[in-house]
Image (cartoon, one colour):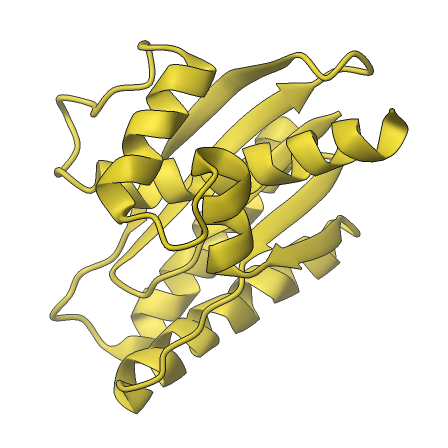
Amino acid sequence: MLILGIDPGTATTGYGFVESDVNGTTKVVSWGLIETDKDGFKENRLEAIYKETLSLLKKNTPDLFVMEKVFFATNAKTAIAVGQAQGVLLLAASRFKVRVVEYAPATIKKIITGNGRAKKKEVQIAIRKILGNHVKSKAHQKTHFDNAADALAVALTHAMKAKERSQ
């Protein structure tokens, strides 16, 4: 099963493709970032996220689209912006008729690190440990590995939960 994990954001959306077989073996197929111009108009940024996601879906044809649920208790402006990014991501998945599953951040952290309150750095370390040291920041991209690590963590969470269900 090819799983596309997404960490939504308007400035940087992380993505990660993880292949999971019936035995629960997982491997990273690819990962990266969709980055938008932070000074650009909101509608142009959302369009860029949508178009790049369509391109990823067309190129890789995943079986499942897994996204992190966004929860912000204090910053409504950020929550709205990320919600808008989620909207165009869901639309892209719908265009390709890919089923969408969402997981809460605490669930992802619990599955990946064993601690539902883990810090971002702990998630990154766990992702590298689980998926291998070849998952490193890319030299040609900005230093937003945490967004890609979160996307890989989302995909891996689903793969691990699917393995649990099959046992």
